[in-house]
Length: 249
Image 1 (cartoon, rainbow, N blue to C red):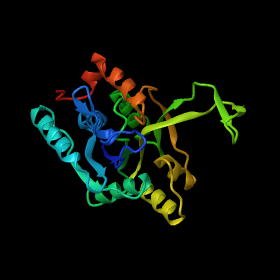
Image 2 (cartoon, rainbow, N blue to C red):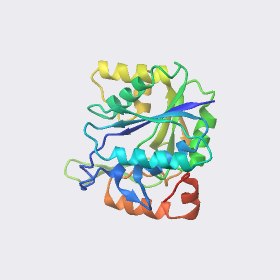
Image 3 (cartoon, one colour):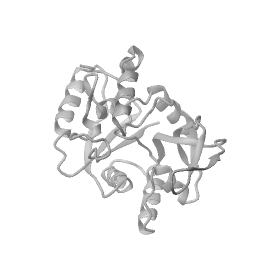
Image 4 (cartoon, rainbow, N blue to C red):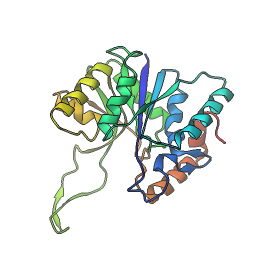
């Protein structure tokens, strides 16, 4: 069993309100993206990693140097990290990452896609995802059952109705699909002028049914300064720091 990893990291931090893109903000001695990469760098099943970057990204080179130092200090071999250019939106960036793997991957190889701004994914969740999907016909994604009461809003912000949360899940990452099928799904969406919000949606549009694999609600995506506070607290626990991989500075 092996898989490839794609990390779309083209965000510019417009919603975050910071001059530096959120994936490069330092948290407890590492940038957010280094935390997001750590479980995969430490996983012997990860055959290689493609980080998809925005044009003119001036922050990645220092992260790459840090990763090289981390790899040099580690006794265990880590997957090679390469880069690819970003696209106009997330799905286009992921497709560029897949294109960068074309000469190295096989059609039925598994590909995991993980958000650069999800630094708190537990390694055991990644292990569970890979284990559950290894022989699955379609693939799937980490997800968390909706736990809050959900409201549908009207045009002026008033409550229109309370939504039954039974059977509703929050999609997380990583998401895991076969190389060829994911390429087909993203190409089909692009040809139809559709922009999926995640890889699972593109696969669903082909008629497939990805498997939901329950993951930790702590696997948050940083989209606001408040999220960064939460992530800092989560990554401050000794167990999480130890699980984050080698080379914590």
